[in-house]
Length: 257
Length: 148
Length: 106
Image 1: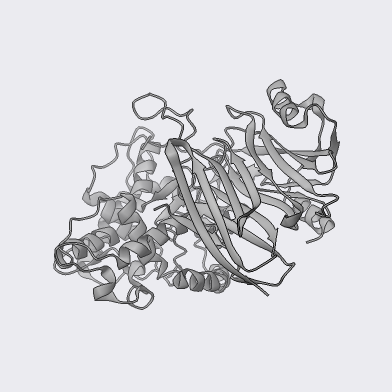
Image 2: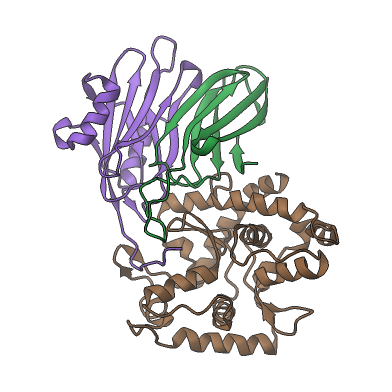
C-alpha cells in the first residue's frame, strides 16, 4: 500500500514530464488519443482498474513459492529499487538463455530456475498482474532497449513484419499506424502504436491484457491469420515496437478503449 | 465546487444536459422511472449528470450524478436512480443517501450498449423528484476482435 | 480473498465531508452475452454495495448488469467519529466481500 500511495504522488510529476516530452517529440502515446474521462481514469491510481491487478501482482511478488520456497522479494528486495527501469528494457537477452525474451518469459525463467515453481500461464491473470507490478516500477522512465546484436537482429525482423502486407485486407501495420495515424477509423482515432502502456486495461476486454494480445487482435482486424501462441513473430514485433518507441516514457499500466 | 462552475465545466466538456421531457422517452424507460416515482411529477433542475458526450468504448463509461441539496435532516436527497434507454434492462443503479452524506454525489462506471439517453432521477426527503437526461454517443470500435 | 482497492482518508476533521472511492475485481457478467460456444454466459454480478460507519449505514447502492466490470463506486460522507468504515459487496453465486477502513476523526 505504501508503494501505491507513492505511485499516486508520483503520478502528477509523471504527467507533467510526459507533457514536456511530448511537446518536442512527434511521437504520441495512445494515452494522448483518449478523451479526458479515460485519461483521468488512468491518472488516478485509486480509480485505474489496472491497479487492481498491480495490487495482486504485488502480493505475488511477496509470496514464497516453489520447492526453493522463495519469493521474488527474497532475491530482488524492494521492487521500487530493483525493478526500476527493468520493464523499459525488455524484450532483452537474458541469462541463462542466449536470445531475447519478453518480460513475462523473464519472470517465468525466475519461477522455474530460481523459485523452482511451475511457470505462470502465458497471458494468464497471475503473470499479467506480476508483469504490471514490475512495469509500474518503470513508470515515467524512457523506453530503453539495450544495445545488443541479437536483439538488433530481432528488431530488424520486427521492422520487416511491421511493413509486410498480409491478410485479406492486404494491410500492413504501417498502413494504419504510420500512414494514417491520427486519422479516424470509424469513431476511433488511429494511434501511432507505441507500446507505452502495456500491460493495458483495455475497456474492450474489460481486463488487463498484453501487447501480444493486442497484436493478435490487430491481425484478426486485418483479416490475417494470427500467429500461433508463442510464435517468434510476436516477440520480433514487440522488440521492434519498443525500439521504435525508444525514449518515450512508459505510462503503464495504461487504460485504453 | 459550486454549481455554476460545475455547470460551466459540464458545458465545456460538451455534455448536453437536457431538461427532462417525459414524452421524449421510450415506454420501457418511462415505466422503469414510474416504478421509483410512483408517477410523481419529474421536475427539471438540481441534478447534474457528468458523463462524456462521446464514449470511446461502451463497456466502461464513467459517470457522476451530483444533486444540489442542503443535505440537512429537513431537506436531503434520499435516493439517486439512474436509467438508460437501450440496454437490455432500463435500470442502471439506485443509491440511498442520508443527511449524513454531507454531499449528494455518486460516481460509478456503467455499460452502454449503444448511443442513447441516460436519465438520472433524484428523490428528496420532501417527496420531490428531480430529473435530468443526457445524450451519450457510443462509438463502435473500428477493428473487429476475436472473442477471447 | 477479493481484490479491493479503496481510497479514503486516514484522518478527517469532525464535520468534514470526505470522499470514499472503491474498486473491486469482479466480472459483472450481464447474463445477456453469448460465450465462445454460442450459449449465454450466466449472469454473475455484484447486486449490492453498502458502507457502514461504526455500524451505521451511510451509503447503499443496488447495482444492475449495466454496471461495468470491476465496479467502481464513489460517494461522500460526513466525518462524525473515529472508528471503522466497513465496505461490503454482495451478489450472485454467493459473492460477498468486505473491506474495513480505520479512520480517525479529530
